[in-house]
Image 1 (cartoon, helix red, strand yellow):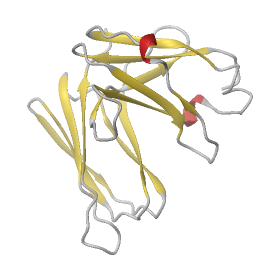
Image 2: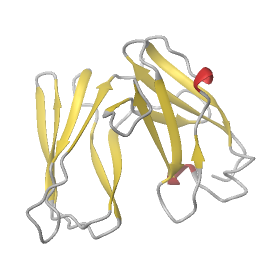
Image 3: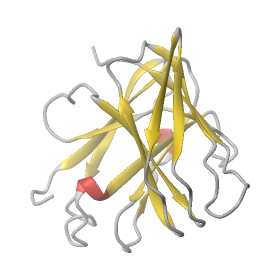
Image 4: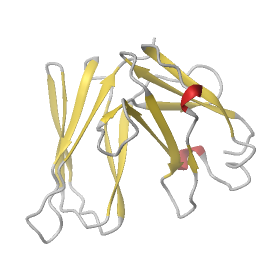
Length: 181
């Protein structure tokens, strides 16, 4: 990110659920957290927009690139117990481009053995294989194709085994897949 721009986040919520947005650095050791005030976020069904999120005050001086940011949008309640999300599209000029792939980044304190995960939607299921071992205290990237998933509620389910153990990390995330108009 070299230019001073105002970033925007576009996301879809099929109902009047309240959204809670957090943006933070997912690469490197620099700590940054952005949370909009709840009254800055609409509660109507459909496509929602958050912005303007200026880069000149913090992101540029701290040399935080937009590609190093992760956005988490929880729906319904601001609690780690909630696994209902809205995918966020970060953009800054012109309309956002259609989503080609979804990406989830998760942090694990313990190493994980190679694993697979399922993407499940309406009349749709696909298994993706992650063939790489993940070390202790690592960020794991889960990425999958968006265009082939039907519109509607979609779940990502994974149960990777911890390296050197029979214990598993059982995770499930749910989001609404909606194509840009």
